Image (tube, rainbow, N blue to C red; front, top):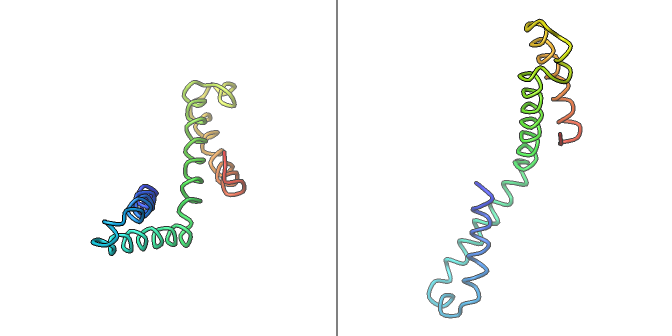
Length: 107
C-alpha cells in the first residue's frame, strides 16, 4: 500500500462525509474508504515501511555520492593511481555506510 492510497482514502472520506445527498445514498463508501485508510495506516506503523524507505534513500544517496567520487577519481580515490586499489577503497567503504545509515537513519 502506498501513501497515495491513504491520502486518497482520507480525502474521499472528508469530501463525501460533508455531502448529505451522498451520505444518504452511498454511506457505505465513506465507511469502506475510512476502513482502508485506517488499515493502511496500521500496516505502515506495524511494518516500519517509512523507516525502511528513509534508510534505503539515505543509503542510495551515500552510494551515488561515493560512486561519483570514484568515477571522477576524486576525494579518497584521488591518491590511488591503480584501479584495483581504488575499487578496494570503494568496497571498504560499504560497511561504514551501513553503520552510518543504521545509526542515524540519515546520510
